[in-house]
Length: 354
Image 1: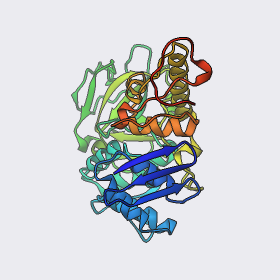
Image 2: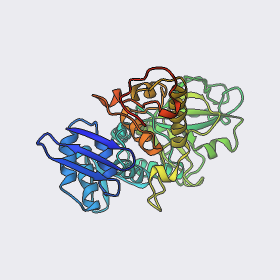
Image 3: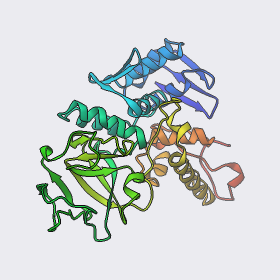
């Protein structure tokens, strides 16, 4: 299948059977089809979308064909039969329906969450995530916050808790140095959410951890190691059996977020991270154009190392920014030509006047 994108207006699809489809921006299938371009088996999925014109049915099609492990039925979202609730459900539905392709970290998170031996712990973790919708890293671990003293030792200690890994002082305080992995036996952690201050390793939202500590750390937590989420702090903290200290925190880590009350999409509801990436894309393209160079989408991706951006998501950003690009043999080879207004006496061979 071949396709041509007319920025912000339409997509022309040339199917392998010879059929040609012109999908206008006003078509409810536009965003979903655009998000599917470049995927493995994209023609099969797009064919399924072309056979439907009901928006709700279209969304079901994209979920069932693109993410077969997920089922959205009767208001319930499941992954491999596991029921997903709260803000995580809203986030996943919005990302899937808007054409986001990189949801592997969420799948990894759920795969780990399924391994949590306590059903109550799983339900409570959904409550915790609904408070601040903490980021999830590539491994599927939650990124949370830990407040400590200036010497990296925990503010309070418990000499009765047996720490399996980690350094403990005479007062039972734990050393939280960068790179340290701290763990206790799961049965050493209080699973009763009605008890606010009790045994266990505590981590939480930035608001919670920053409210009383002199140093703030970023930690990663395997969702399988979450034991309870006490209700006394509006579900802002959780007791876990293990975590790893990543680094000191200077600013809040942004993540894709969805308002579960309004059902707004990640792009609508939290634009800070997306806007920042858009600015980086815009600035990179402008700088290359000023140098008389027409960058490829692959080169733009290379300028965004560590962002998790793919060639497809970058092409989506270019469309959203209104920046035209010339389709190459592969999406990565697509070129953003230097506009005629910026061309100098050098010879350009873009093959596309803008």
